[in-house]
Length: 362
Image (cartoon, rainbow, N blue to C red; front, side, top):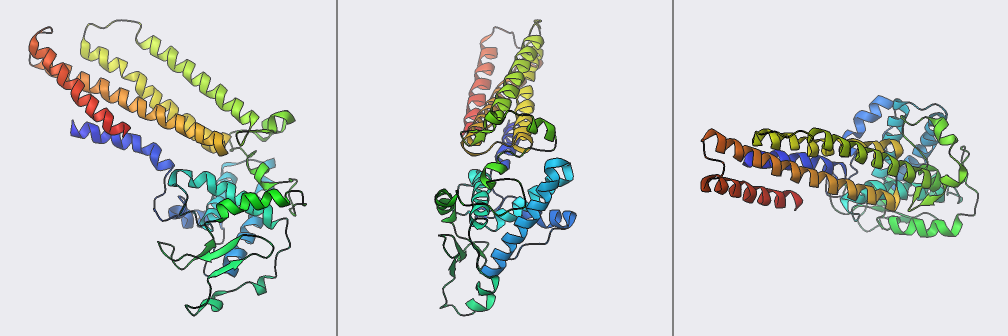
């Protein structure tokens, strides 16, 4: 029983690992594999040893993103998509997201990066030679904060945690960037791409499995946003989810159409339904996150629904497997079906199943 509970808990934790950080002090979820990905795509590593190095890294990543995105939009490929993800991970590594809940860091990181790209593309940037470098903070008395001129955006030295001593865009950037962007969004964006806003353009991007022609043929009215996600993506997610639910319903009806006298076989056959739910929901959640790419408030709704379904499926599967195990024990001991001992064994199965279900839900 303990082994079964551990297996089920480990299975449900797979979904949680997608939305939590491997380090609790604000390091981006991609940081662990960032260097290997950089080597694969020959992207220069970032530097965060001074404000000048951090700002220089951000501007360099912006140029690399524009170049990669220009090619990706016309000729999608898995390699280019991976390169965009690596660049995105490096952008996130320049942000101090330690105050953001781990499950929201990916979404908040993408939004904050887009706002910073919009802001720095609309203002007159200072000469990089005037930005403090590592020599400016040799003594402990010097202030470790520097504000980008004409903006509320600051690059701050981290004082504690695993990234202590690094210079990152301060944790208040998450709140300050969206507010400041609203005040300057009418200014022209300086970019080589045919976009008017990074914040809007990033939310229109899709994975390599969705052809560029499909996105180009979407009616303009469906490119408008609903709950921070383009309407055509919301419609696609709803249709894909409805189709998956219909197929799961048909599958459930098909496998339970014929009765089985053996109670163990009956329970194990019923367990195929929650197994199918887990497989389908995991697959759809991954497809939505990396191919359709929803964002903002709608992304939170999708993530919450996926978490509910995955844990409900795990509880259902555990319950049926527990009943099947105890039914097999009753059969192995030749206990009469309607005897007091058989009912006592089944009561024990339900008690253990309930306790394990509470553990998974908790």
